[in-house]
Length: 326
Image 1 (cartoon, one colour):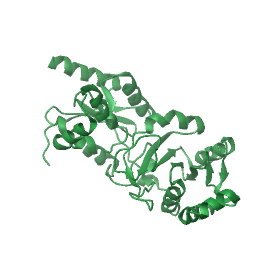
Image 2 (tube, one colour):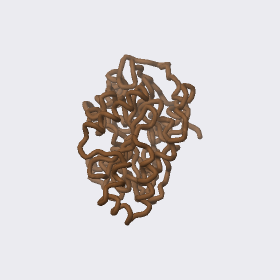
Image 3 (tube, rainbow, N blue to C red):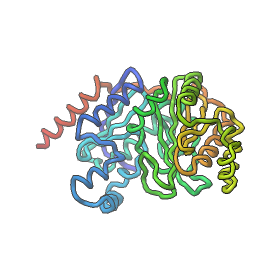
Image 4 (tube, rainbow, N blue to C red):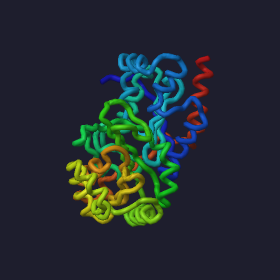
């Protein structure tokens, strides 16, 4: 693969939360910066062209704009650059010569520095330990893993129920192969992996949610309530998943009995929507026997080679380029 010269600016911050927070503020306050996940929808509204037609054309001339899997990646202006968080940094990749391939270039930078391909499973999340989460590409329910852009919408809601919460990664399983958004619709299951600074804080917040939530009960109790047991017995695969989860007293069900919650190392996993029992049991079984990753397995530190004060400087550079073009 031959690529023309691309400019890369790395903005360094005190913490991962600061980096993500400043990027989020830029998305909110600057109309030229949008989540890459929303790019086609926004362009359809601005041009009046249908999303399907835009996707068809992008697939022909710029497929990487549809395929980029970098978490929270953003697009600047009219193919002027890609922004994405990376540890305690926000990276800006820009190239006039390769404007139609910017997400491809950004993914190469991202993959080189996190040590794993962003398009492979497991998908990286907000905290370094999320790399240990194993997410199946396909489930016994015939649901497949699809892209989702729900982290920004969920950030505030999750922060209210988990006092020590530091970040989340959202996965969506769907019987369709199209992109999905929060909240899940019919045939979809949402998986939210919530990160914490320690295993102790994760378990404390797990217990906090259990004691404060309405209609929360351990799976081990749920399966022994007659009306629920009878309903499960009508679907043997549901019953088997519930019985497997019931072996762990920390797994509980809540809401309208469509949400499963369990701790996993320094994380809490929330599974919500259709087939939640089967999805939760699959993910739980896939990860429960694995050891918690060591520091060597986590995301390596990423030191800025070209660091500037913050994202306001990036916005300034973008506008300067537009003024020069005009």
